[in-house]
Image 1 (cartoon, rainbow, N blue to C red):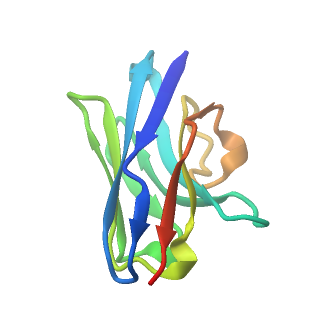
Image 2 (cartoon, rainbow, N blue to C red; image 1 turned 120 degrees about the vertical axis):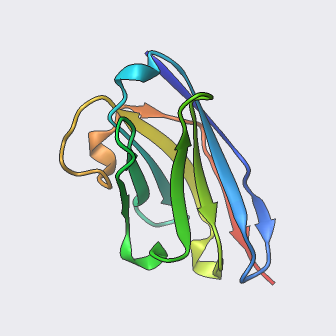
Length: 125
């Protein structure tokens, strides 16, 4: 089993920055994709960014390219989402998720079976 715990959410003004953290514990060595998803009220869960845990390859949804960066600290088993130039439309609950399978669809939420509890990000003036 793998446990994921997110932190780092909060309220920020437009154009501000936040860094989300996801601490992974348990059998983390077998993780293949670790991804960040978000869900705003009344909307479907959306894949934001993903990283191939063994190799560091990254994937992003178009709306965050150039603004968000996903990374990992192998020694600490922590995954990060650095979010810059935040916009009101980035407001959502953000979730960290993991899967041990290379499904070829790193931003599809149905491919993930390990989920954190979420951390709220609010972008507002």
